[in-house]
Length: 104
View 1: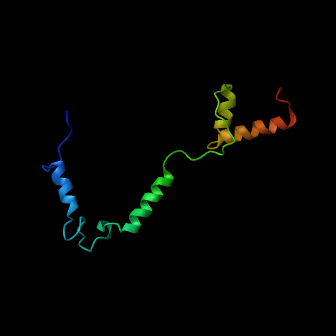
View 2 (view 1 turned 90 degrees about the horizontal axis):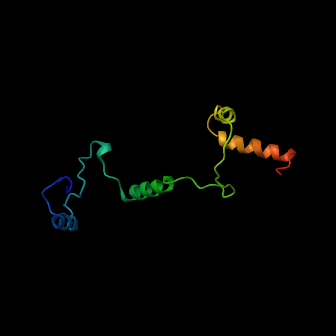
């Protein structure tokens, strides 16, 4: 299956049409509805740069390591009940425990 056909123009015709823009521009605007106004070049650049900053996972601190570990269900339930940030709270609790105990 080759996909859906959306217009009768060939690829070459589309590329040729893009080389010579219409006299009123690609996006005709009647000047009335602001929502229909095409974006300016500056607005397009700003939108593209904002979009790139939001993509992907946020950068980590670089001081943590991901590991697989098993905890008792009641321990996980207690920390998860604290809501968002429960893993950070669990990390803080373990750091606090290390102040008074030897890890070995």
